[in-house]
Figure 1 (cartoon, rainbow, N blue to C red):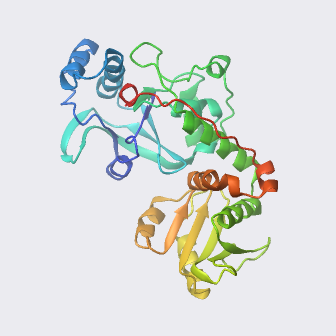
Figure 2: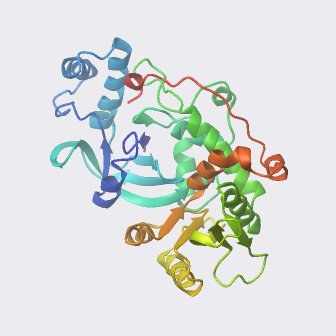
Figure 3: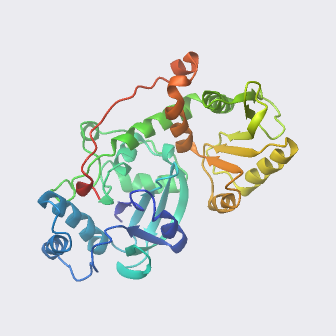
Length: 348
């Protein structure tokens, strides 16, 4: 069994189709059917012909990814898809060969996949595996540090006790073979966010997570009423704008620190609480994210309810960090840095 990382689009635009249709999907919309390119040499020629403006290094990079997706990936292999807009990872198994399709809009290159879990928290993975999942490429093999066996353990609910190897710590991302065609590029921003997620999970458990959300809302300009530990009547935070918090929008906020995805029951409870408190809008914060039924039902309440998973909370923290109280910033020490963004043509 081989383990592959396959992204669902640069912005996560293919993830919904992938999960709902049971597929692994990649971009490269300009590429024709990859099936005839049965060798690396033929694939390289196809890449150069289809996109002649690609640099030689970019063409080798694309060749490695496309050849792996179309020909090296086998039935029974494991696929991991880091979800771009959720702090979760989907894991499944390849169930058939590559095919070129014309019935999925801009999506053409697919492999059938049985998705086994679609809601595994990124914090379930040790840092070296997260570094592998953080490759900026669309397709790569995750191999080193016994990755295949560790992913199987995580699927079974076992903890990942792996540690960063000496090579990984020096920049070996634990991804595919490090030849010219598959040498990985790291997503530095994702790597930093995973570190923040791990720190938050360790230091802001239970009611402290609600306290952090309350501080973020205050930094956003809300006047809040924060429920102390104990029965909260279905609401952790009440928030409003204006000097006394009387102005709208008036919010009911529920915070769930569990690692398990929130279900529709929790969403409906928040909606009931909003009616009780005559709130205009609701915010449901779930560290463990949300299962698919919640995501679908929440679309019907787009103008009244927002969902935040762990990644959304980190975004809100970074957006408001300078306005957070000094004592909270000492609990969560962060520093802004600048990093060079790799050329997009070299990492698609």
